[in-house]
Image (cartoon, rainbow, N blue to C red; front, top):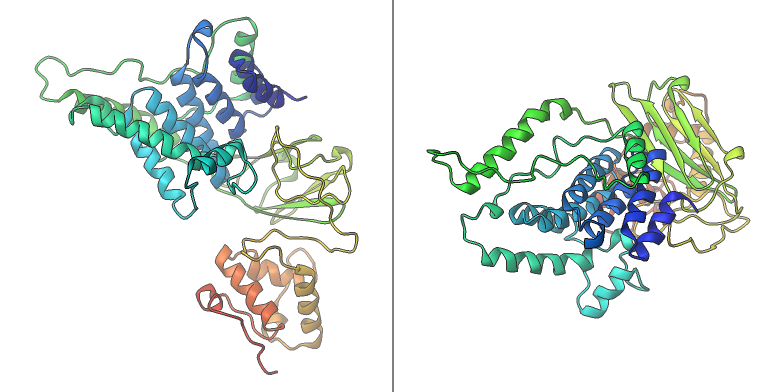
Length: 443
């Protein structure tokens, strides 16, 4: 059992000091894994009095580190989970105005999703039960939100309008979050192993500043001014956000192939760590910042010895050999506490590509073969100009030029129009294509 799974077990047993130590050990191996910070944040907030009591400040710091790392990855699910932990920690610190602000962000980002309507559905969602539609423990904010917002509204109703606890002093993304290095996390682990009650370095808000004698500021205004001044002082050092690297993946019976679209990466600059249940890549981006791509845990186990990483001029490609050949992956990442179901990929099936379409996975082999045939017959003038800068066929060139650079709606439009029209039409306008079936055009 790895350190993160041990942390999950300790948390389930309400042994939060052990959980914190295990999550810290996991972070010493993967110091930029947002899921571990989210889990450790929860453990900090649940420490019992005999263990020193809840450490809400450490919980908030971990949540904000997780938020920064999740935002760098562009992972929506982790971003919302980190914001949820952040909002709860702010509430527990009695920063009710800030908590309300973050809960509002979460509500805005999830408003298109159907929240549980009754107590039974809330329990199912929280437990990730059948039909909940909200996943497991990392995706239960729909059940938590009504509970926390109700508690928050009761607190706000009790406070005077000028109470300092109503102050809103934060932004959607924290501007001065320090992400600990591997060495710093190892130092935390050493202190924890020695029996010291060590949390993440506390933020500046231990006691709220009060207006100085003769000041015209109210207590709430003094708190707000202090927080903004602290934020602006350190913002310059953290204003540069690492570029986001787009990635896609598909699978065959034997392998999962992940492609990161990034240009100009030197082969010797990519640090690779392939394990049976996790992968991690770090490399410097052309713009300067270091980029981290970590999947932990993977949806299912891989064979690291037979897996490989290829660094090319326009992309980095990971070929992950499945330990259980034929097992169907429904996602790249899984859960430490919920092993994937042993769903099989049919022996005769071609590669399966994820899609944002509501109608499920598209058969890209049919699209590819149709494009190849069309190219061979010279029916498309546009196709004559398609080329692959790394030396490939017409299909690879076609998708590199059109599909790879398109946004999700454009891709759905391309797939739907091409397949429904039997290869006679190709549209990039989803608003038009979504209106109905795209009919075949006469040759």
